[in-house]
Length: 290
Image: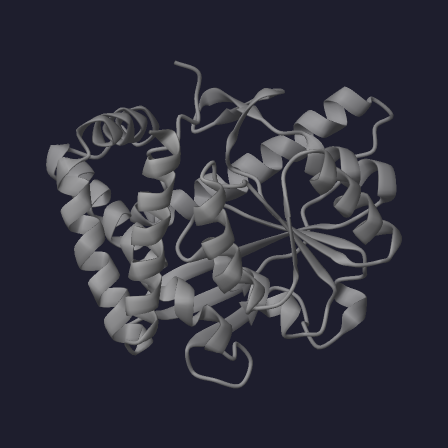
C-alpha cells in the first residue's frame, strides 16, 4: 500500500509540475496560489498548528488578522509550488523578475569572502535566494531535507538541478559536503528555521525552540561568515532578494555560550522578517516543543 501511495503522490506531483511549467510564471504562480488557498481550507490539523503558533508568537493579532495570515501562508505555499518549474529561467541580475538589494557591495568579493554560509528560512519563495550565488558563479552547496517519498524526491530534484548548484540532503552525506565546500572555499546555503530535537534551546518569539547548532559551530570552527538572505514576495511573481551584513560572531572562549549567542542572532533575524510579513512564513512547522 505504501508503494502504491508513493507512486500515486509522485505521479500527481509530476503532473502538477509538468502542467505548471507550460504556463507563464505569473499564471503558474496564480494557479498555485488558488490551489494552495483551496487546500488550506481543508487542512484542519495543520491550520490548528498554525493558529496556535501565531497566537503564541503574535498575540497582538485578532482572529480576523490571524485568519488572514493563515490564508496568506497557504497562498504563498501554493505560489511557491507554481513557481518551482520556472525558477531556472529567472535571471536575477539582468532581468526584472527579481530586485536585488544588499547591505554590502555584492560586486566586491571582499565584502563576502569565501567560504561563506548563506542562511534563510521557509519564507517567501526561499529557493530564489540560491540563484544569487549560482548566477554569480559561486560554487554553491545547498543543504535540504529529503522528501520521504523517493519518487517525489527525484521529481523535485529534477527541477532543482536545472538551476545549478550542488544539492545535498541533510545527514552524514550533507555534513561531509559542507566540510568539503568550506575547505574548497565555496558557499553553503542552509534553511535554519526548522526544529531540531537534539539542538540547542534558544528563544524564538519569546519561547525556547530547539535549534540546530551546525551553522554556528561551523562559523566558529572555520571562521566562516554567516550571511542572512531574505526573499520577499511581490505582486505577479516578482521578488525582492536582500542580502544582509554577516551576523556578528562572538569569540569569548566559551564555545557553548558563543554557539547559543549566534543561534539567538539567527532566530532574532527570522523573527524580524516574520513580524514584517507574517504570511510569508510556514507556520505549520512544529517549531516549538508541544
